[in-house]
Image (cartoon, rainbow, N blue to C red; front, side):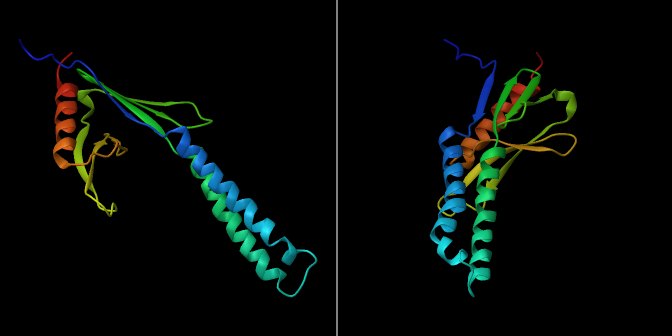
Amino acid sequence: MAPPRTTRIDHDIPTTLVVRLMLVLAGLATLLIPAWLLRHGLWPPGSVSPVIVLIVLATWLIGTFFLGAAMIVASSRWMISPGHLSITVHRPFRPAEMHAFTPRDQVRFALKQLDWVETQDMWRVMLTAPDGRTFASSPFHSAEDANAFRASAEALFRKKA
């Protein structure tokens, strides 16, 4: 019996609700907790009030970055079928972005090692569009797994429909 032929690959890169909630909670904590704990140094004004204002403003800046990250972090889905590749990117409060490619578009697949991971080596498949935009897959724990995904995705993408 011949092995089943793959006619479509779906590759999800999720950003879960838990991650978004953690970012929101971290942002709210850095906005509210320092201001609450240091409120007695802010009012009534005293000699150290300007220093405490700077501390509170710095924590608000950090909290704003956490909240911004929760708003812009994206999840995406790669759908690869013979002669067609589409990438859908979802961000909160924005319409979904759809990127479609055909073999005529000269899309390049490559492997990239993630050097910033301190534990074990991680790998991603990078897709480079003709206009220079890059899209990254979810991380793989070995170069062999990443290369197998790259090879199967590229072969299916380059196959005629």
